[in-house]
Length: 181
Image 1: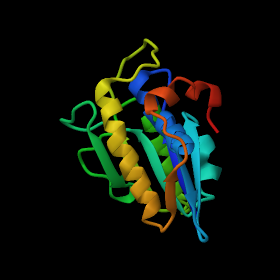
Image 2: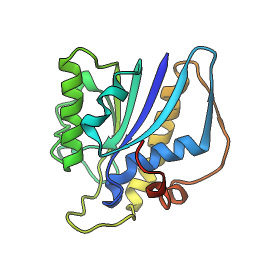
Image 3: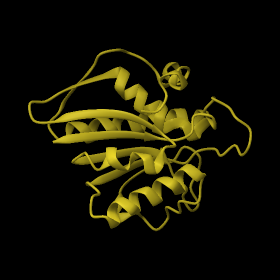
Image 4: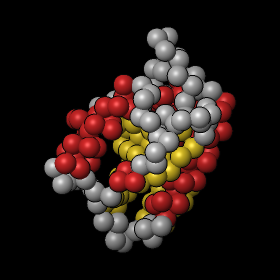
């Protein structure tokens, strides 16, 4: 089975870059081993529809992204199945959130969407100004998200181990050098 961990977001807008940053952290910090399964970690940035052939090539997908939630607070973490999105998830956030939603809906309409889970956090939305700095609330939330992601992988019977002790703050300083895909 092929498992995809896909980080989505715009690293130019602080908290909204958590998906790519966290994907890069998981990739650098952990190693995975299994006789039956492969795990790929991809920084999908804001590519949205360009990710269709990649997403459809996997058997299971976990997306790391930001979410908009009715009456939620910055740093709140949510985990849900794409086919059972809770009513309080509004998808009214940034353009990359809406584009990713539309991309997943298109894949689903074509009948090619693998089982897809989403782990999302409510970001501080900064508007027009760019920053690479994330809020403390989202940095704290990333630790919870990391545990959810590792559990998701381990639930398939994949062995995980730490290959490098590194923090999200360290990784986020050079995510832009790695780029998406």
